[in-house]
Length: 294
Image (cartoon, rainbow, N blue to C red):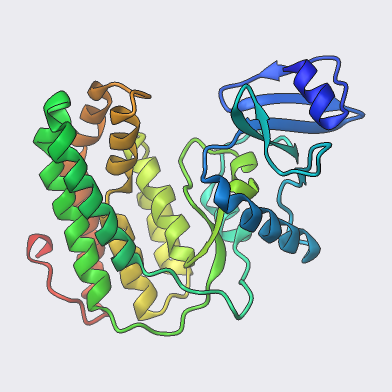
């Protein structure tokens, strides 16, 4: 890897350290991180332009370093990599870090349609499990329950009267074990409603075995949300991204089937959390009826 960094970036580190996420090295007190790019190469130009826009707005994200051919992606052994200058943070992110991160987007930003995106995802996963389910009995046995949760979330989102809610720079995924490196990684940044990040963070913490009630209570009591945002938040908590993400890792052989048991074992307790939020909403909002939450 040292030869590739020398050749493609004209950088000559003395030592290169490999981590689970990639390779880092330090030159003149500047920390560089070379990671494999796992997204669609067609998206990289848009990501690069958004990261330049954020930097120009004095919104810190890790700067992307172009290679000697002035390209964003560098192919090393036929695998795409991207180099960034990073600031190293050892501590895991907390709720306040996420809330501090949010910045409004420009007026031309387009709101994502969660109902449509989730419907497409559910349809794709149902087709996929019909082809691959025999190889993964634990997934096959639990799949219909989580598809059902997904359908509840879709119905809730589609029932809402859409209002004008500010969009922010948010994240594709925020997980309980993420560090501030992940928070400011431009590859992880997207445009969405702020409730996306909070819901994903709380779900990840819950299924990592951590208590979320303190953060959940703080967020609901101290954040000004519109009615639309309250229900987007609930829908995002219901939609089982945690299960579908793990499902994809299992069928691509990055994780073993047994991992799914950790999620399935917490299903009843998680339902209780969702019911608590639903009942709390009923004290001050006109809540669409969801039978299994009554």
